[in-house]
Amino acid sequence: MSMAEYVSVSSQADTERADLNRERQELATSPKHEEAELTEIYVKRGLNAELASKVAAQLMKHDALGVHARDELGISDALAARDKVSLDLFWLRDESRADARGIEGA
Image 1: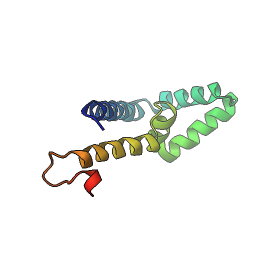
Image 2: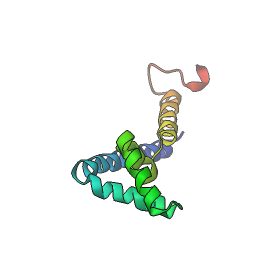
Image 3: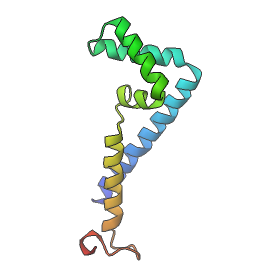
């Protein structure tokens, strides 16, 4: 991974972190509005309004931030894991690090 790739992945992670912090704040201050946003998302995906509302309410009871991250922001555990692996590989390949032989020498 080049330095440009590292910066890109790092910037994406910073953006996602900021988005999650904003969403966390919105959930704390306007939970009904956030539930309505989810309902609208599910209606756009094809559910009728009644079912979409029930799904949004149930998912928010289970993991409000997680469902908003996935369905509103498009942030999934898979994306987070991919970014972590990319950053880890960058550091493993960094020959300037005194404690690493690089990924090829491991």
